[in-house]
Length: 248
Image 1 (cartoon, helix red, strand yellow):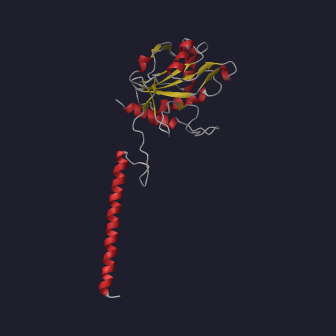
Image 2: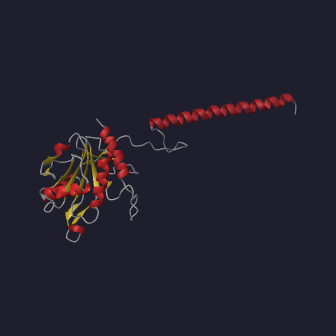
Image 3: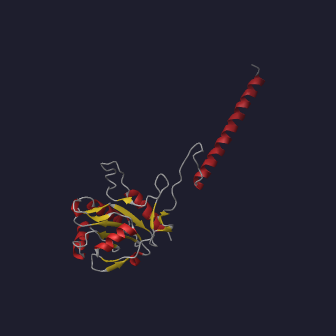
């Protein structure tokens, strides 16, 4: 083949390579731009779901659900109300000290949260006993000492049983019942609710875009998955607490 033809062929290769390179750089730039802006969709060659930036509100009857008013004695026999938690991000649970099954795991998970956020003065926990006839402030104090509950904004609360059950069932839609044949004599779900600084119940969305609402409190991070194949949610709860702590 004549030398001129060879040079022309090389020139064509170089030109085509340059075009491909320029196109590739442009494609990467556009993809990076979309990733930063959270606009990548399923139709793109590389589909990436942008992380949820803010936690959603739980809505009921067309309104954002807020923690209803409450007033109970804590482990130090001090009256604590929902107003005392305003300005704080806190986790809510319903438990009882003689629970033979899930409560010890729930408490250990909450102690893990306590230790994780020990440097934050605006983080707390509200633990409502569903067996207030037995769980007096004195009993709750011993329970707190046993598990290393030290956060001054972690209140173990007791009082009128009907008022506590109403708060659980109507305020949080969390199961709390006295059932004779249930382990320990009481039935409860083992779920945690997350409340923001203004008193609204918040959560992330699940994989289908629906509010998660509650966080599973009966599996530790170390355990990972329980016998039923359910995954622990303490890690995501930590992530979501951080988000709310950063909110103004």
